[in-house]
Length: 283
Image 1 (cartoon, one colour):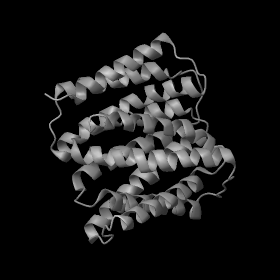
Image 2 (image 1 turned 90 degrees about the horizontal axis):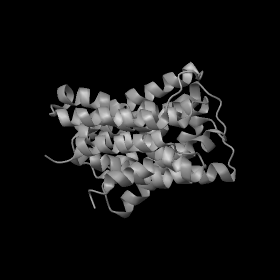
Image 3 (image 1 turned 135 degrees about the vertical axis):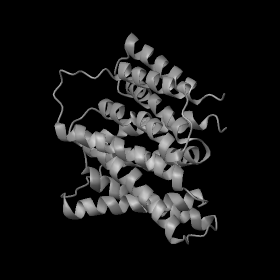
Image 4 (image 1 turned 45 degrees about the vertical axis):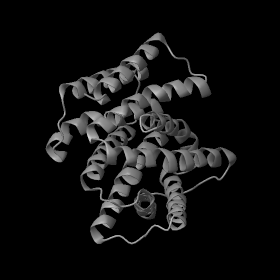
């Protein structure tokens, strides 16, 4: 089952990009995320109580969980949602943030004292080439600068969050840790709402369906899997599967949005898959 978790994660995480657009079309991105992580925090709170898990944390563990939530759910997702709300195509946003393994591999050695071998670097290179082939960024298209900047801020945030989580994660039960992380994300977005934006949400059927998907399948499902993978694997190997996300997102768009996949797209998916296999397989 553990071997299937990375692929389940990729499917769930990729699907989030498909449902981000209808959310930001019907709400302010930060109001939507504050609402999402309020529900997520309450959900993990109820589950933790049901499991008779202690909610008390020492100061160090609380700061670690809360800060990780600010980085993962606050800055990273805030950057992604803001980027899409400024009309950056979700595929381009996905491609930018999935450059994360390059930064993580570069920093895992000095920050986590992990050994990063040539096979992992080869996997990273193939993964990035495959993702770029699938998405085919057109340099002739004019994209809003603020949206591109937001995507790169999201990239830096999820990279630092992954390294931070791997280095400082303790023995906190996963539901309790997820609860405090969701609270950290909600707090971040409330601060943004309070000082920088005029929040609004249209609670129509499109918004509710897309938001329900992101709450239950992504926040409760994919994020829990990600935390499990980070805790039980090296950071550099864990994040390499992110290179499958742009290709999988494009494939989902072909199924659900009737967007066509070209021969180059299919070849890129195979190249990215080969990169993930090389970088993550056991010696």
